[in-house]
Length: 178
Ligand SMILES: [Fe+2]
Ligand SMILES: [Fe+2]
Figure 1 (tube, rainbow, N blue to C red):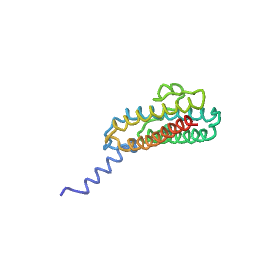
Figure 2 (cartoon, helix red, strand yellow):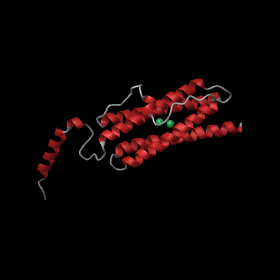
Figure 3 (tube, protein in one colour):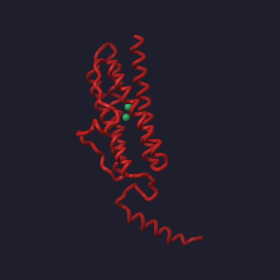
Figure 4 (cartoon, rainbow, N blue to C red):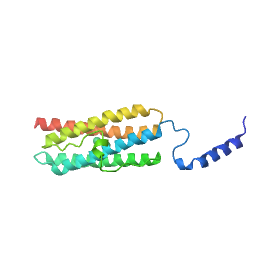
C-alpha cells in the first residue's frame, strides 16, 4: 500500500495551486473555452426568447388573447430563468456572460420574430422553440461525458423547451378548432 499521507499532501498542494480555476479541476475533460462560447450562444438564445415572449405578451389581441397571454408571460419568466442558469455556469467555468445587446440577435440560435396576429405569434414561438430543441440536443450530445454538469443544465433547459413547444402546438390546435 502506498503512502496515504503523502497523497493527501499532493492533493492539498494541488488544490491550492489552482485556486484561480474555481470549480474547474484537472478532472474537467471538455474544451473549456469552447464550452463558454457555446454557452454564450445559449444565453443569447434565451434572452431573445424572453424578448419575443414579452413582446407577444403585450401585443396579444383578440378573442383568445387572455389565456394565451398568460402562457406567453409564463414562458418569458422561464426563459429568463434559463438565461440565469447559463450565466451562472459560465461564471463557474471561469468565463464571462455576454449580455451585450449589440450582436445579440446574431449570437442567438433562434430568431426574434414579432408576428402579426395571435396565430402568427404562436407559430413564431413554436419555430423558435423547435430551433432551441434541435441545437440544445446537439450541445448535449457534444458535451457527452466531458462536462456532465453543463450537460445536465442544458438537459434541464431542453426539457422545458419541449414543454414550451408542446404548449404552443396545443394553442395552435385549439385556435384552429374554434
Ligand atoms: Fe429557454
Ligand atoms: Fe422556450
